[in-house]
Image (cartoon, rainbow, N blue to C red):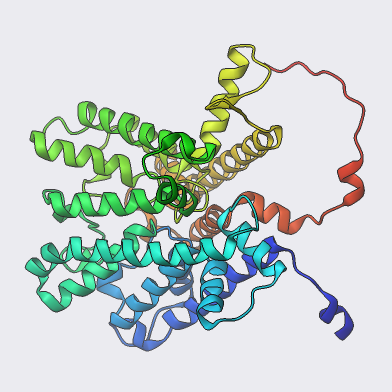
Amino acid sequence: MKTLIKTRRFSSFQIIILGFLTVIFLGSGLLMLPVSTRQAGGASFQDAFFTAVSSVCVTGLVVQDTAAYWSGFGQAVILTLIQIGGLGVITVLALFSIVSGRRIGLMQRHTMQEAISAPQVGGIVRLTGFILKMVVLIEAFGFFALFPTFAGKFGPGRGSWYALFHSVSAFCNAGFDLMGTEEPFSSLTAFRGSTAVNIAVMALIVVGGLGFLTWDDICRNRHHFRKYRMQSKVILCTTAVLIVLPAVYFFFCEYGEAGLADRIRLSLFQSVTTRTAGFNTADLTELHDTGKLLMILLMLIGGSPGSTAGGMKTTTAAVLMATAAAVFKRQKSAHFFGRRIPEESISSAAAILLMYLTLFLTGAAVISYIEQIPLLTALFETASAIGTVGLTLGITAQLCGASRFILILLMFFGRVGGLTLIFAAVSDDAHSAVLRFPKEKITVG
């Protein structure tokens, strides 16, 4: 037995999953301490575990209001879990190794590559150092941008903590907020008229959702768009489309009663935050069913690979759209910017879409049946969980234990990634990789 334990080698995917689970359970233990809650006695395991999963998976769904229920210590634990979850457990461990001067072996480099979706192992240590610098700079920008407004409303001391918390939460696309002292579960609705808060939070969300590889490309090539990697070009173009088009819908179809400036802020903010951030500046229950359905689609798509965001990813949606366009045009292969998309990327995109739709729909159907709530409301909740968004129509805190457990599974799946879980469960088989069966045509469509 000892020999088996010593010789047991975990794959990169299994290490990533174990890392997330370890942080989740440690966070749950800390949140259960009496010092973590405002009321004596501490949190129950169910509340602590749900909050820890939501924090590490940077989702933002909560069963207890963050400001009203958790103490300063509890909020600090949540913020730490958000930071670790946003960067990725493996990335955080790698940063500690780099700072301490420890040597990083080939296996560790490969695990780091998988964790941040890097194209190659070479240069992975440099990229990790770049990530650390970017995180510090961006979150510092968020702090200084939010501080004047929060300090003016809550005072310098409390305003500093609020600015730091919301800067990290927005950059990590987590959606946790501390506004519950004004009104429980109110998110940023009190700041719907603050242009400074809206712009700062939206900027943090977009930057965090683009991915570190994209920002590495931007910093290296500046305004020379042609020199960017194909993936960076696809991410930037897809992100722009997914911000502009939904904002146009919200502007003309949802917020017609608001003034022009308020209408622009509301439309842009809801468009940006829906794809994984979880903040809201408007009452989502007042949206039309069409608006809710649009938000569900945006939540499922999510952010970009190697980012702090979850969801199927913008590249997955882009590959599927390009593949469909190629089929409609009777072209042999899909392509972007003069580059052909590999068949394995198309296969992976199709598999990811199937997994997300299956889990999202199944989870919603079960929750709708258990809780006896409208299916659209349940679909909104499960899309928010699997997309690690955190938006809700106000039902999370009222759900029973079984429904909460479904959301926990969806949040974990959405953050770690479906293919990561599959690859961790299925061992590599060199023989099956070489073996190919005879081909026979099958009619689809």
